[in-house]
Length: 111
Length: 112
Image 1 (cartoon, rainbow over the protein chains, first blue to last red):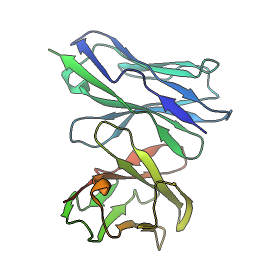
Image 2 (image 1 turned 90 degrees about the horizontal axis):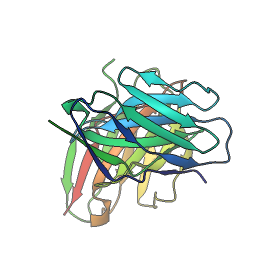
Image 3 (image 1 turned 90 degrees about the vertical axis):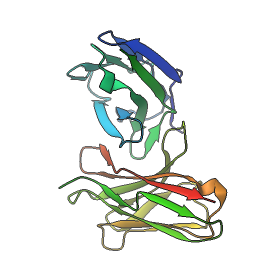
Image 4 (image 1 turned 30 degrees about the vertical axis):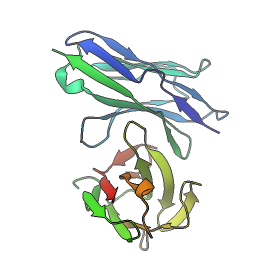
């Protein structure tokens, strides 16, 4: 069975600083996708970044980047130059066919 | 296309009543997923469709829950004889060919 673990229930970061959210997963699959989703308070869940497991190069989307360590089954999200609008729940997710989500990390960006 | 839509956005019902939610996916997406999310938790998979076929159902989906996608477009999720434990956000997501899900705004169910 696939599992996704986010060990940081809550985090905070000063505006303009950098923060890293952790995620580990467990699977016996070799081909899969990993995702970070953002869910602002009372708002819709949106995709932040995606990583294909067969790609060694870490995905980057503007201020968001990942550190994908396949052997360690680790998939952390780095947010650079944090902005107030980054305040949200962040969910790590795994997919080989069905999607599995972690329990989320609540990130607060402090002005 | 405006993305995945769900209706209603909020539903308050009394215990024992039946409720039905609708999801309209992104038009070219052939996969449609239903999730349940409770406060402080990540989405929990309930079921998914590829076109009109329901391919998988979670053990979380009791006999009181049923989902349909009759023409491979919109989907409905019905909960019969609602219980207070059914109170949650019900999320719908659709997926095309890139193994990426787009979520709707959700339907928040409150069972009194």
